[in-house]
Image 1: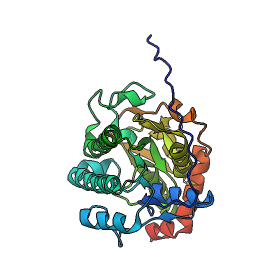
Image 2 (image 1 turned 30 degrees about the horizontal axis):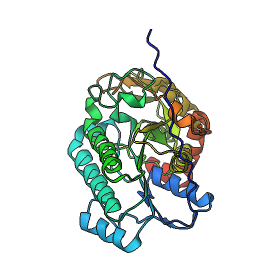
Image 3 (image 1 turned 180 degrees about the horizontal axis):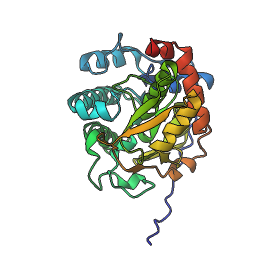
Length: 330
């Protein structure tokens, strides 16, 4: 058995100025809203979060104009087109085109306006489908991607390479983080476009409200996944900005996974659904297993704090409190 050598984490001690102008691109999304909440709670007063109706990050001229007017000191790129297996598999053109344009526009504008600190948020789908588990950051570009989300993954890989190029050519301390599967308040519960966890919450909630005797889930339920609450990721983002500086990406997750079948049972328990569950074997499972090695992140002093069960329970409470639950059952 081969043992991987220990890796040193590059520690960068540079507390952020709480009055600095910080762009949170994608502030209304699952990740951006969590980052906004956390930075606000930490006393940051210069947050900048243009929403889509005011700034389309796919519009290059508009993005450059915004940077010229607002001059952020720091940028966190959390804006992206995201979706679950079905959305990625059926609309790959949108996933690669939109995400490439968002990234190019923000990163180019940030460089032109000399943004000194930037955090690019990628995704664990950048890693090969058959990467050794738990997945280390060094697995990037060592194998074939999962076909169902390769367009999105390629866009995110391009973002990582873009940040590395800026570091190499211009010496700016920009960094990249690779979160695992995320969930939490502000998630997308759309029946066609959502990721697996919000999709399960919606499905079991509707079955509970309608007193349906059976729920049908995609795939075999044997695929294994790791889930991180968006609030834990938000804390990690601030830790990275204040303590890390390297061209090596950093995984952010829990380091623990479970089967989709077990996840389904957990969601059903939280919702209170007691009917039966069937599995549609004609639908894809995606990557067989994906759990991240988070040793580089934990070496910086961070660790996840929200358990999966508690996170699902609070997310479901948010889903109900926003009216989304009532709307889906109507």
